[in-house]
Length: 191
Image (cartoon, rainbow, N blue to C red; front, side, top):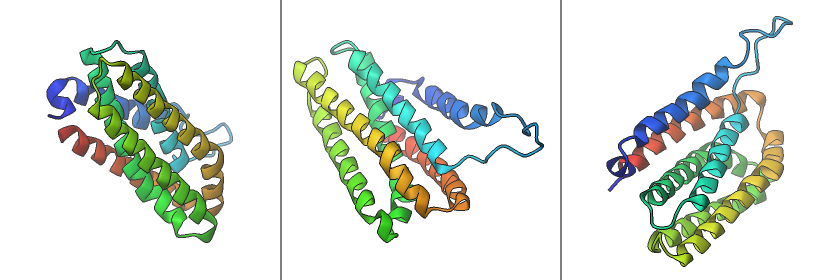
């Protein structure tokens, strides 16, 4: 049973989150800077950081949720969908291009390995009773792993990949990432 079947407002929440992150953030900038130049176009790192912030927020809420409640179950499903949608789009539109360059080979492999570890932790949490202590401990382990991965990616991987990708590639990949990220959210929510 998908998240939408348990929480009819899920699609509305997702639509609002995407609207705010994609549309409103673009309108926060002036049409032109005082110098007459246009603002910088959205790049891949901006798009990824938006999802990273959402992941951090969802994990904080999840760890604060009350044992065995519908809120905890819904939050975990939202975390799972967010992580899987982000991972899929990020692997396709950041890791693959970087993996093809010798300078990015090692860091791409490491990041992919951490995604696999996160996926395994998600599966472990799913198997446990949301009212139990073991569930909370495993959810904390998941949160710790995700936070570690995001920190490392933003501090190290973005710098390596920034040297490999051109400005035009970063803009193009941002569009592809956002499109695939939204598609994966729909696919995962319907599953």
